[in-house]
Length: 370
Ligand SMILES: *Cc1c(COP(=O)(O)O)cnc(C)c1O
Image (cartoon, rainbow, N blue to C red; front, side):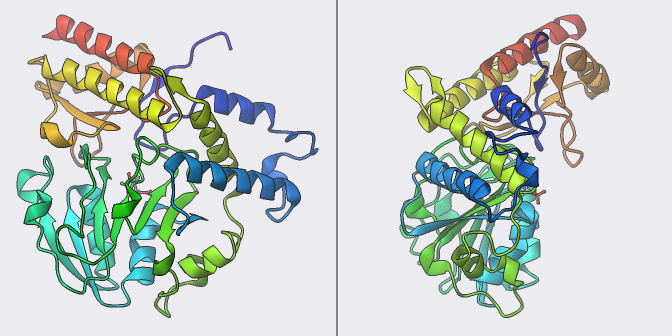
C-alpha cells in the first residue's frame, strides 16, 4: 500500500488492524484454496467449522478463559444482551445494577422489563465522571446477578479493577458489559459470572456478540426467552443453533491471530497490547491535562484507556478543530451527541503513532487558536 491510511478514532464500528483488512481482501474470493469466499461457505462445512474452532480457541487462550466457562458467538449486540441477560439469568427475580454512565443506564432500564431491578449505586449526581466505591454499593440478598458496565464508552469511565462481590458479602454473579474494552486487558474471571460485548469496538465487524458465561448459569432461561437467545441452547449447539454471523467471526478470528502475535515493549500477546494501551492513554491524558485549552473531566482513578472524551474550553472552535483534524488524517473525533465535545477512541488496533499524531495536532491547534 502506498498511501498511509488515516488514523480512525471512531467509537464503533471502529478501526481494524491494517494487516487483518489486507488478509481479508486477499482471501475475499478464495479462502485458502477452497474456491469459496468465507461469506459463501456453509456454516456447517468443514472449512467454516475450522475457522470457528480456531477463533473460539484463540479467544479462550487470549483471555485465559477457565474451563468452566463457555464462549458463545451470538447476535443482537450489546443492546440485545441487555434483554438476553435478564431473560437467562434473572429467573424473574431480583437484579442489582450499578450505574456508571450511559450504557449501564440503558442496561438497567431494559432489565426492568424482565426483573425487579434495584440500583445499588450510581454516579449520576457526579455526571458519570467517577466510580461509586464498591464499599458504598447497596447490594441485596438473593439478587440473581449484579450488572456493571466495565468500560463506559460514552462517558470514558473504566473499572481498572473489577469489584469482588464475594468480599462485599454478595453471593450473586457479576455480569459485565465489556463491549468497548474486551481484549484490551486481562479479565479476572474469579470475579465474573458472565461477560458480554459487541464485537465492533475492539474485535471486528458489527454483527457478532461475544458472551463468556460460567456453566452453572446456563439452563435457567425464562420460558419467554427466544430459543436463539437461550444460552444453554446456544452453548449445546456450539453457537450454531442458527446461522452465526460467519464473516464477522472470520474477521474476529484474524484479529485474535493478530493479537496473539502482537509484540510491544518486550512483551507479547495480550500483555503487549495492554502495555501499548497503557502507554497510548498516558500520552493522550498527559497532553490534555498539560493544557488550559482542552479538558478531560473524568476522575483520574477511572479514566478509560479506550475512550477519551475531551472538550475544547471554547466550544465555538469545535467545528474548526474537527475540520483541521480531518485534513491531517485524524478521523471521527466528534464526541457522542449526548455529551458533546470530542472523543478519541484509541482501541487496540489504533497504533501508537495515531495517538502521537493526535497529540501533535492538539498542540498545533492550540498554538494557532489559543
Ligand atoms: C457499543 C456498546 C453497546 C451497544 O452495542 P450494540 O451492538 O449497538 O447493541 C453496549 N454497551 C457498550 C459498553 C457499548 O460500548
